[in-house]
Amino acid sequence: IEIAGIVNLFDFEKLAVSKMTNMAYEYVASGAADEFTVRWNRQALDAIKLNPTVLVDVSQIDTSTSLLGLDLPHPILIAPTAYHKIMHPEGELATARGAGAAEAVYVVSSFTTTSLEEIAKVATEPLWLQLYVRDDRSFTKDLVQEAEYQGCMALCVTVDTPVAGARNRQQRVNFALPNGVHTPHMHDAFALTKSLTWKDIEWLKSFAKIPVLVKGILNPDDAEKAVETGVSGIVVSNHSGRNLDTVPATIEALPRIAEKVNKRIPILMDGGIRRGTDVLKAIALGANAVLVGKPICFGLACGGAEGVTKVLGILRNEFELAMALTGKATIAEIDSSVIWK
Ligand code: FNR
Image (tube, rainbow, N blue to C red; front, side, top):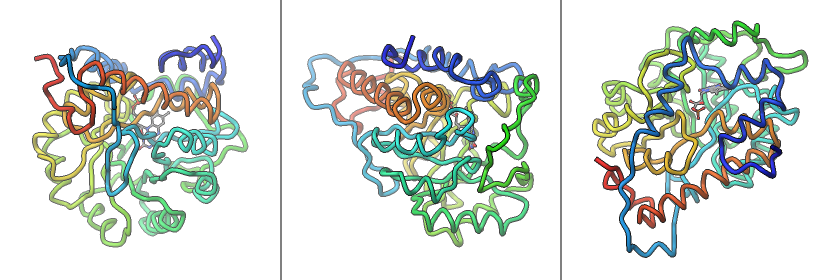
């Protein structure tokens, strides 16, 4: 199979195996420990059945939505993933170009291997920064200010990684960055803080000029605290099963969180989104938008910017088909009535 023959997101992973170094492939594909949560993310989405409504005029499908003041043509964002230069030599520049062609917001990882300045030069769609807070809070403050200076439109503070999980597959391949690949906004040391609390979120909000979201919420009580802390949005995420194994699938956590949040702030979700029907299910169960991680990495590995665009294009097209086939012409019409109960 070659990129021209790819018809769905799973095909990208099959092709990527032959395009990536084993170390890079293992880095992207693996989860923590026994990878239960990795599998559950997919299984839980697959297990949800859809309830279509027929004889609805679906001649005009409109996937547009608004999020944090941005008008988006579709609700599919690029999740922050580290180290794009190990997946493709053009790294994050290719990702940003691919995002641009696919009209998608790109959430740049703190562990980007290309500077925000360079990425911003080629980006034609909004960039957000995913933020890992470090022990040295002044370092983090400088990074936030650099992100603002480069035009990033939101911050996603990752809150599910005080420590990295038991990443056995990465251990087996002795994962390390190849020579010449650097992380300009993190330096090379993994010096993330273990003392991050809601006070730090308040601190970030006190000086950030752009919306602050927290990424990595699974517990409805934490969602409530996020609303009380005044964040602009939350990302329901289990880090694609890379941190704590045996936490539930995100699609399983989503309805409880949506109930708690009760539309006070937008909810994004990631974890196992591979099909247009998955996007539809997430929105039906309370998400305003979704992010995709691994498929972007595999698309990048398979075809650089073109691969990234193709991943997003296939997913968006499948989402449109899913809307038409369930009788939902707009995002606003997608609600729990599309879920077979
Ligand atoms: C990630 N993820 C991640 N999250 C984050 O906040 N900062 C990061 O640097 C990374 N890096 C990273 C690398 C790779 C290779 C993967 C696969 C994931 C998690 C990511 O943002 C997102 O939560 C999940 O990837 C979404 O699930 P799927 O779509 O990959 O199943």
